[in-house]
Length: 296
Image 1 (tube, rainbow, N blue to C red):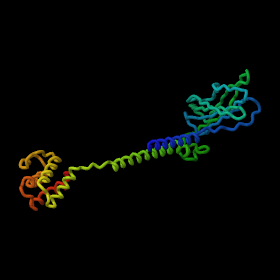
Image 2 (cartoon, rainbow, N blue to C red):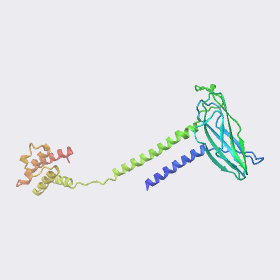
Image 3 (spheres, one colour):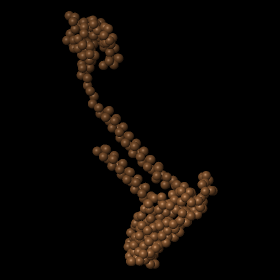
Image 4 (tube, rainbow, N blue to C red):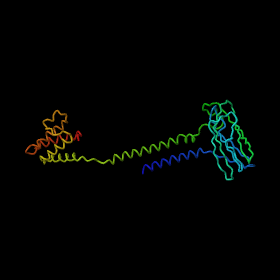
């Protein structure tokens, strides 16, 4: 459930950022004057008409208003001047309440001719009934500039560099959004790992608990032969000693404290009388060494 909520929030966040970017970069449709006849109206717009260098991408929008009862040939737009189209033109439309339609022709152009000023001309075919006519676009002047070194006094007109908001929407906002999503995912994963460790079931070693219980009995001085034998069996099983007599444990690579413990506990198994206080203290002392070394 938490994963579904996280994915939903991330999708909504990315969708919101995408919509915000579209909203900020959407084209601005111009207002046309009242039409005097059924001839199409055209407006040519460019982001800036100066400070271009050789081969720079020039983005031009041609807005054409088609009057009711007429038809514009969308494939007939031609561009004149020393320009080349670097990509196929993009056409979008917007219908107005009076029945007219505004078409937006987005042109990506380049010029490789060295001139201080270049003029873009153009024409577009349209029909009124059976008659085909030609609409001539208003010429658009594009000015070039020498490369400047950053000093504003060498620039012509307003600063043509990328604005902070444009740079932010292209780089800062996507980077910040992806960083936030990454950090959220890391926090969720880290939290799950911590909870998995904290909620891990504790495995109870019943054999070890029984050994501790027997050592307490030994310390009290009330240990029987059967309990000495049980303690010997538990220790041998845990350390995988096997049924080897204590006299043969030396030289087999076993822990020295383990060997001393088994030897000290052996009299409690076979002797007729219980271990005296000294024998009990000896067994308990070797047991403390094993516990101190975390052998169990």
